[in-house]
Length: 484
Ligand SMILES: NC(=O)C1=CN([C@@H]2O[C@H](COP(=O)(O)OP(=O)(O)OC[C@H]3O[C@@H](n4cnc5c(N)ncnc54)[C@H](OP(=O)(O)O)[C@@H]3O)[C@@H](O)[C@H]2O)[C@@H](O)CC1
Ligand SMILES: [K+]
Image (cartoon, rainbow, N blue to C red; front, side, top):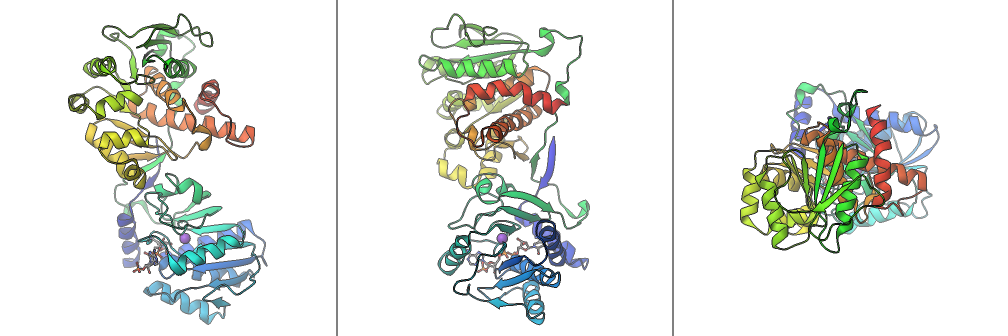
């Protein structure tokens, strides 16, 4: 279920120190990885502008420049500030000894190179880039050349994915040692381009326990026996659909059907439609009385505010059913301490699926604070409420109650559309109904939902036009493909 491990900057520094103690030169290894990457993508003789910063990110770039120049690439180094750290100082010396062309500013009329290597700032970025550095980024962007970022795009916080002031957008990022969540979540997807890892051959025993991982869920648990029937594939109950928001509950129900749930009930707070013509398989009724004894319960799509909504959430929390809480169910919990306490005390499997504004209400902070540090926010949600948390948005994160989190790498702006959250809710519920744990179902649902968006974007030539209803129609195909 977990893919490549993620380590916070402090832990990366520990590995770095361990390598130093053992006489392993990680900067040399990083430079070789850059050299290999360039050789794979460009022919000898290609012109490469290597922008090197004052720290070890710059050191990587300077050593890579030496290797590239030796392999007949046409290298020019832009070094706005003399390096201040030992390893970077040594790398600078080597570039000078090799007689590489080097300037502190970009010469007037500098022609667009075949490639810009961004080795200005990596995980050591400590504050927004301003003044001279902002101007350097502007000049590099104005060259309109492909950009390879070393470790992380300069200006992006590699852990949170937050852009700190100006940032140089990369077409590719070659990241060192381990993946970083910030390359995928928040602003990361807009600035990092295609991400590749150069692990620098560090043995796993040098690393502490990871804080998280990339999301790489398994789908084989959904494989069906020939000798099965609808009762084998679970029951989902969706509660929501207050007056004026019928569609949200229907979308969740349709998604649950499309994802393979055996039976799906949709229970409305408003008047229940007699039939859903687009999915007549759905069983529609009013949301009255206790929820059924055996099902996966999803409460929230179109639930709306008010006493009845609060009561439905309260009843849901009282059950021992696996529970998916979304949208207004989360707003009810955020505004009612007693409901929040019941969620915390709940022992049965539970997942909450807030978007950033709902997450902010649950955490009692502003949406900006959630987006400033999405890994911290998802971890706080899962820990505080003692359940699994899916923090939606670019680079959806999935938090476990013990603080471990997954970063999803599929999906994109095609999914930034009305009703997509309802689809995800129905999808998660359907996967739990088919026997997956809440953790497995959340990870697979988020991945699958993202792939449906990616498939559409590829086929349509762009992200515009994918409706939630169209996503529902794609779920079965994506899941079958993942099951293999
Ligand atoms: N970890 C590993 O295993 C490996 C790491 N490696 C590489 O090292 C990189 C990390 O190196 P790093 O720690 O020297 O940080 P880096 O990103 O070069 O920046 C620090 C410099 O920038 C400065 N500075 C910061 N913010 C600033 C701002 N806004 N505006 C202006 N200045 C600012 C800061 O100065 P100060 O904050 O003290 O003013 C300092 O001088 C990592 O990303 C990877 O590429 C590889 O060699 C292989 C293995
Ligand atoms: K960089």
